[in-house]
Image 1 (tube, rainbow, N blue to C red):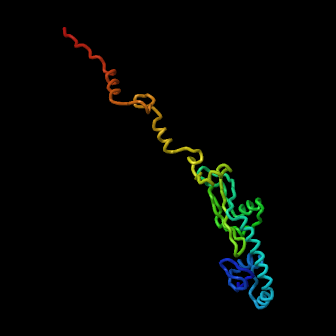
Image 2: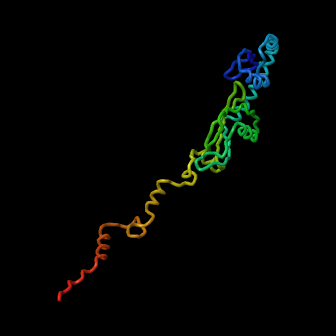
Image 3: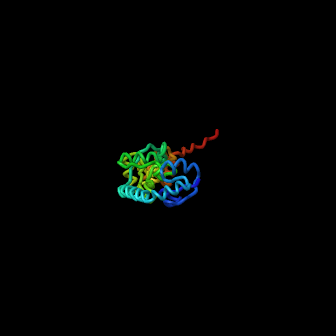
Length: 219
């Protein structure tokens, strides 16, 4: 379908341009959102008549979008979600969640303005781009964590996507500690401070030697 753009549309064209788009995209988005008109002589004449008004409206909307962008610039929002020890979420964070998070902070954003094609499925620090206007974008941060405490740790650069990181366990130290547990070959608890040498073995061997019986006399 050919349409006349009533404002700049990213990756599509500038205000006043006639472009060809998929019928579904036009019917479901461009036309109902007031971003375009069907291309025909009547609508072309209508556009030229309203052009000054449309340009003024576009400037106003861009200014409003820029004000919101200035307030959001550099902001990070904590998102608490349940997750496993490896950091995988029991669920996800999608565009609708971003809208709800921003609304709770006093910002009204449409779901279509959130550039998040793939939902977030793991804890960590994630950047999300918001298209507030065809000419205004802003990037915000989402600190997705299991708790506010972990979110603070992540903000300081900690990686909490493993049990070691979460509980402060060092795998190498644990292996070293376990190496000294159990019993030695003599059935004794192993002591890492003891000096096990050949002398101990010789002493055991000496204790285990049976006395040699006297030779029997023959009749």
